[in-house]
Length: 82
Image 1 (cartoon, rainbow, N blue to C red):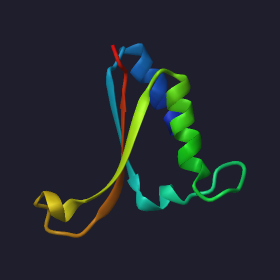
Image 2: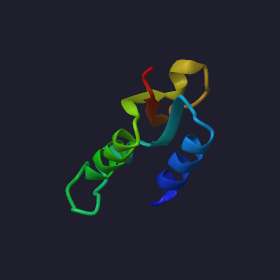
Image 3: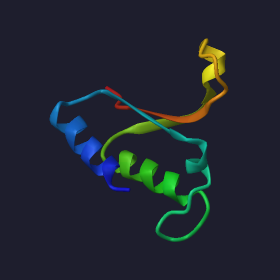
Image 4: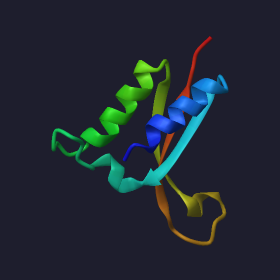
């Protein structure tokens, strides 16, 4: 559950402008430290925001992109303006 912190550290070290996270759709309703459904994703997005990243979240189905299976994944795009 702490991989995001290392990911952000590395992104900062290389001065990345864009990030992408891929995860299971269950992250939308996953409980964070406070036990509320959905707060795990909120906490991750808050952490990104505090490090200067804006975020956009989408659910995408791999079948819509030519993959021969229905596999819905949560995608988080992070970007820095400027």
